[in-house]
Length: 332
Length: 301
Image (cartoon, rainbow over all chains, first blue to last red; front, side, top):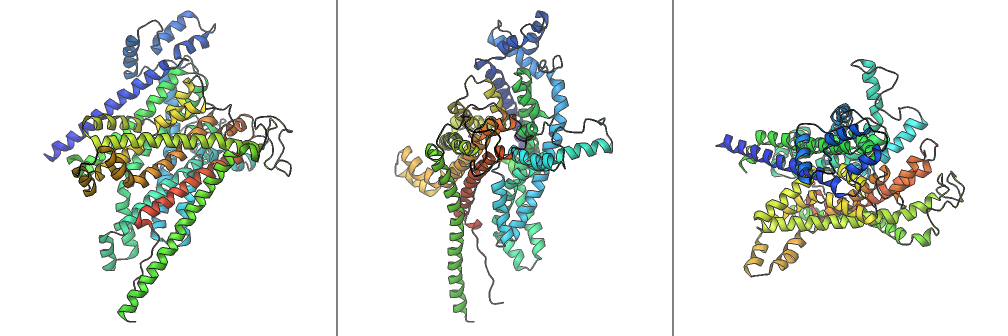
C-alpha cells in the first residue's frame, strides 16, 4: 500500500509537470504571435535582399512560421518540431541549428552559475549556523543584516563594480569571456586554470549577492529549532554544545532549506542572465541577450524552453527524492 | 539568595531585556523607514531639489565629482546627481506600483483559492504552479523584446503578472490553516457574510505575511526593472537608475574610468532595496517571538 501510494504521488507529479510543460510551450507559441512585431515579419525584414527566396522558404518551414497557414496548422507544426528537438535555425549564427548553438552555451552556464549557487549555499548555511549559535554576539548579529543588505544590491552592478576595481583598475582578473583566447581549450591544467581564473569575478559577484537568503533561512530555522523541547532536553543531559548544534540543530534545520536549494538549482540555467552579459560570458543568458538584440526569434523561443525544462526537471528530482526519503509526503 | 529574590530578579531583567530588544528592533525599522521616506521625498520634490531637465546636456562632459558637480557629469554632459534625483521617480514608481499590484494579485489568488477550495482551487493552484516554474526575468526579457511600446505602465503590468506566484502559494497555505481555527468557524456559525469573514477575520491575521510579501515584491520589482533597463529592453528613454546604468555601460563609462557615472545609481538601488529589506527583517523579529533577541540565563549555579 505504501509503495503504491508513493508511486501514485510521483505519477501525479509527472502528470502535473507535463501539463505545465504544455502550458509553457503554448505560451511560447502565443507570445510572438500576439505582438505586432512578430517573428514572421521580422524574418522578412531582416532577410531583405540578403537571403535567396529558396533559403527564406526553407527558414519558414524550419521555424513553423507560415504567414499563410492557419493558426492551428502552425500550432501543430510547432508542437511537432519542439517535441522532436527541431528548434529551427538561428538567425544570428545562420545556418547553424539553434539546438547546436544552445548545446555549446549550456555547459558554460551550468558551470558558472551552478558553481556559484553551490558555493553561496554552503557558505550561507555555515554563516547562518554561526549567527544562530552565537546569537547575542555583535558579529553574529551583524552578519545576517549585512548579507540581507547585500542581497538587495543588483548582482550585475556588484559585478560591474568588481570588474572596475579588480579587473580594470588593478588588472588582477580578466574582465570578460570564459577563457583566454590564446590557448587551445582542452582537458588539461592550463585550460582548467584559465577557465577557473575567468570564472572568479562573475562567480564572486553572484555569491555575495545571493548568500543572504541562505544565511537568513538557516539562521531563522535553527533559532526556531533551538527553542524546541528536545534541544532543551539535550542541554539538560549535558551534551556538548557543539554536538547539540550540529546533530540536534543544524541537521534538522537543513531539511526545509534543501528544498529551496534544489529549486534554485533548477533556476541555474536561466539564473544570471545579466552577469553573463556584463562579463561577456558565453552562456545561455548571454545567448538570450544576443538573441533579443538581433531579433533571433527561434533562438529566444528555444532558450526560454530550455530554461523552463531545467526548472521542471529539478522539481521532478526533488519530488522523487522526497517521496523516497519521507513516507509522509507520499501518503498525503 | 532567596528563591523570591531570584524570581523578581529574573522578572525585572526579562522586562529590561524586552525593553532593550524592542528598542533594538525599532532602530532597524526606523533606519529602514527613514531611508524609504527620504527617497520618496526626493522623488516627489525632484524639480525643487535638482531643477532643470535631467536629460539635457547642459554641462561639460566627463567632469569628475567636485564642488560644481557633486557627482560629476556624464559623457553627454548631464549632471549625474540630477539624474539620480530624477531617476528616483521612475524607479520608485515601478517598485511601489509593481510591488503593490503583485501583492494584490497574490492575495486575491491565494485567498480565493484557499477559501473556495474545489475546482476553483485546483485551477488557481495549477496557474500558480505554472507561473512558479517559469523564471520571470528570461520571460520578461523575451516579452519586452516583442513589446511595441515600453512605457512604465506596460513594464509594471508585465512584472506584476509574472511575479505573484510565490507569494500566492504562501498565502494560500496560510488561509488553509486559518479557515480551521475556532474564531473563523465561530464567525461562520453566527452567520457572518463571506466578505466580513475575509476582511474581518482572515486578512487581519495574515497581515505580516502580506506586508512581508509586499516588501519582497517591491525589492524584486526594482531589481527586475533595473536589469531590464540595463539590458536595454526596458524603458531606456526615460531617466531611471536602470537606464543610467545602461547609458553608462554603453558609453564605456567603465573603460574610460567614469566610475561616478555607474556607482551612484547602483548605490541608490542598494540603499532603497536595503531599507526595504531592513523593514522586512524587523517585521520578522516582531512577528516571530522566537527571533527576538533574548538570552535565558540559568541562575543559582
